Each structure stands twice: as structure tokens, then as C-alpha cells.
Length: 87
Image (cartoon, rainbow, N blue to C red):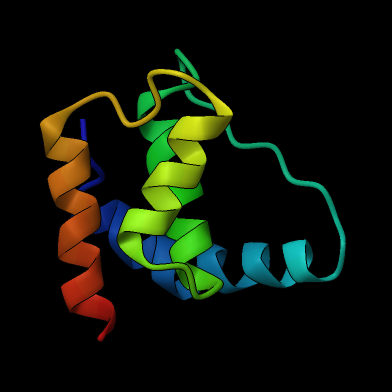
């Protein structure tokens, strides 16, 4: 499933900037969910978008790294909604 409002609030207020900072500082991070594809892919795309990638480029990169990333239409629609929210 796609993240909900509670997750969004915590993501924006706590995690997004900290993780982007860690990545830019050269640190490694691990993103994982039960299957390692749907929610993991969604978060990976959000991080790439947070670093300046376009939605399409971020999705392409994540799917090129691992087959089956971003499993549902709901997750992909959620990501496209984030483009509108962050502009």
C-alpha cells in the first residue's frame, strides 16, 4: 500500500532531511519492507526526488536497480502526488 497521512507527517518532519543529509555525507542507508520492493521502492524514489531527481527519472533508476520496485498503482500515484505537494 501507499503511505498515509501519519507516515507523511513523520517523513517530512523527521526522516526525509536526515536521510538525504546522511546520503550526501557519504553514509550508507538501508531501506526495507516485508518484500523489499513496494514500500522500499516508494521510499527510494522519495529520496531521489528529495535530492533533485524528477519523478520519472527517480522511478526509472529504482526500477533499473531491482525488478518489481514500486509494486502497485496506488504507490505510483502516491509518488506523483508528492511531486505536486513539494512544488
